[in-house]
Image (cartoon, rainbow, N blue to C red):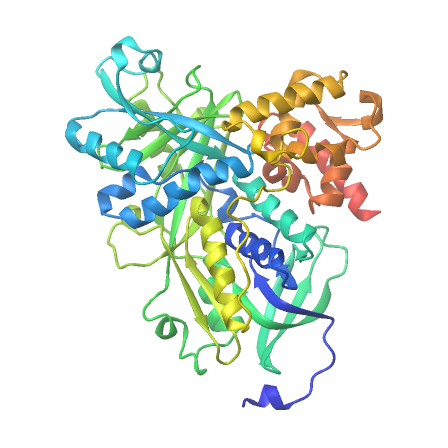
Length: 537
């Protein structure tokens, strides 16, 4: 027994069964699953929810077609099994998305592409996503934006997701089932105590003139879902090195993280149709060009090792030039770095498998559990599409650690706002998420005839059936309060502050929404000023 188990400490400010450290997709997903099983859960995140990796993805729900080339059939099948399940769970923030893959015989022969797509179609069952097919691009509208040389191609279907809102919905679901969600709360110390863990948390406000608050938490188990900071938390804050666990890497039997930066750029819309493109580069990497926010095209991603602080990341000019050139190789309309209206990068905490090229590092995950010096679980790696099954397996492991396994529940569950069907008869819900959303939008405008189509679309795609919370007491546009920025009213800002933990303009304009793309600097500043006035009040 360690000295910390013998020395009495003051009563903790909060007691819980599980402390989850990390407010990205894995941490929020695990907190949701645990709370739904009846565990007392507290989640802390050092910044805003989804501030880092989980809001900096390519925003796809996909199996990972290119991973087949690396032999990752198990990972691809696991992700494909999740695709339609996720699309059904939150049709307001996710939708099917078809991809056009022009064939370049210099990089991969056509038979290899056909074989890969056949495997992609058949590794998991599909209910509403269409299978792949060959297409004559010289006779197709999808070939119109391309250089004449790209005459043959393939089309397949995956899904698109608002990644930051997916994290938020998991946190909302956890909170509605009793979990405590603490954004902007850093875990500064973890020590074993009384058979569990004593944590020191520092809560800070987005507005730095407000005081920091320190609180202590007594937890029976800890989940380390800190993403790029997982090793740092394990070795430093938890002090596992030298303990009975034998150190982070030794305890993990060699598992540790390889931090890889993925960068994206957004430019004015490059094509008019609603399909995305998957382009094969001459270096055999792939680059996506995706319709984004109605008026833009999202281009990404790169794979660059990131040896520095995972909290300090940016898109280099070299990466911008690379992405522009990769797209320009296929599209008639050249893309210049000067056209980039937004660039973002995230550090992906990949499970290091000693692969040489960053692009080939596995996107799979590993869950590591130990009972000494007290029960803990660490998440290594992972990808957006597999978050639910990762969380389910993690909750199983935590239940075993606590000696009380509890039943799984998320397989057919909806995320907050995702049940768009009128009434409670879920058996009558249309199979297509797109059909569900369109029907919901029509009902929304019937109930609120003052609402124009643009606002109805944005709100339904952000909040789904939770729109009733935002519109509580609203009978006309005048009831929404002042229009702080175009189509952004005080009623929505109050909702985001009260229900979605938003404090700053970045929280609202770049994570809870992407309105920042559509606003001028002056309009973005107006939102910042409004929130600052509320936060200081």
